[in-house]
Amino acid sequence: MTPCHAVEILLTRPADPGELRYVRSSSRLAVNADRTRLMAVQRAPSPGAALHLLRRRLDTHLPLDVLSTHYPDRHRQVQLNVALDRTADRALRRDAAARGQRPGDVLPQHVTIALAREEERRARQLKERLTPLLTDHTPGKSLRAQPPCCTGGRTTGH
Figure 1 (cartoon, rainbow, N blue to C red):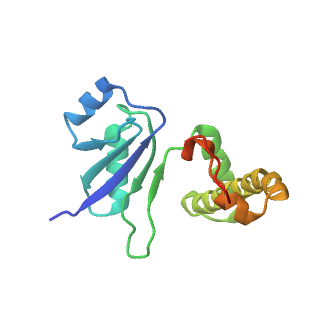
Figure 2: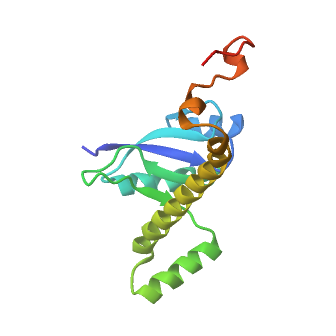
């Protein structure tokens, strides 16, 4: 018996009702409220095969962005299926050739680097926003302060 794999589908834009109706006629899908994320269960011999089968079946009917396995494998890894545009695909292949690796081995490295950069950017942004607050107030006062909306317009006596 072929195992089933839970797949999360991220869309580039909300799916319109007609697209969802068409796809639901051949697949069982759960859709989130804003119609940008879907869940599906796909029979396949492996998680990677499940992602590939769903990509092939849904690609012309929905604005697919990323497909991922919903549950980590035994190595605690979640698999992704990403369709790159031609420019990104060429750049990835060039980088992989320069490193003597396969594109599939280089892509996770690029994703890891991009995620680290994004985390650094967000930490910098948080620090930039908190610094002016902390120059005028102690951390304790900042945490105890309640906005007027929470006190009915009255200030608390701390």
